[in-house]
Image 1 (tube, rainbow, N blue to C red):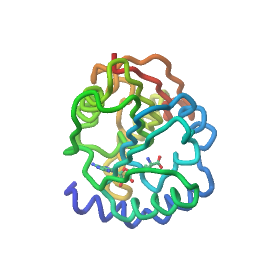
Image 2: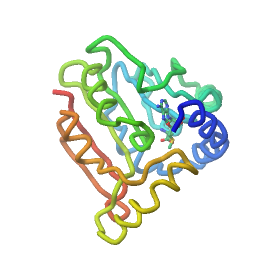
Image 3: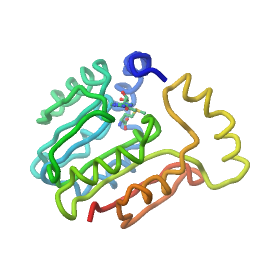
Image 4: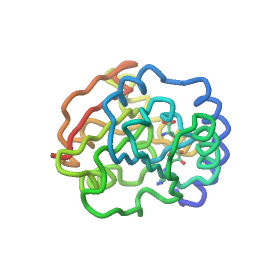
Length: 201
Ligand SMILES: C[S@@+](CC[C@H](N)C(=O)[O-])C[C@H]1O[C@@H](n2cnc3c(N)ncnc32)[C@H](O)[C@@H]1O
């Protein structure tokens, strides 16, 4: 899908993402995932700042990127309300670049579904991480049940058109192919939701 169209789609959805942020949606997973995050941190596809309540700002210097200006406006509002310092970057993650070894930690939640080439995004993240950097992922993808998986594959074109998200991605395989080393993984909701703690090595 054309990127400008995709940006407009996410701009329109930003009101829902702000509401979900205020409701602390998926809060227990986010809290647990982000417990060890510290140092120079990059969050990609930040949306309306759903993870902001879970960063320990005494230990984190945060930069966060998204290509949707409306999402970023809402993320700024949430950050101000929480008194959280964050550098917001308006950019397509797939064209964004940083020098190698820029970050101690990189965070991505519900973002690998959106990119044309999620494996390349993870390869870039691996390069941006300092040696032995940590990568924290909360992603949805194909579940475990074969019937459910077929439905996800069948409905993928509709899901992509309506929400901008792909439902048919094998998240574990994508992460392994990128060269990141998975240290710990949990799967929930019939295996659809992946919590992954990885290292750049
Ligand atoms: C499903 S939302 C998740 C938002 C947030 N990370 C969360 O956990 O609620 C996907 C986000 O990715 C952003 N996004 C999708 N593709 C992108 C791209 N290529 N570059 C930058 N942001 C992108 C969208 O604007 C949206 O904010």
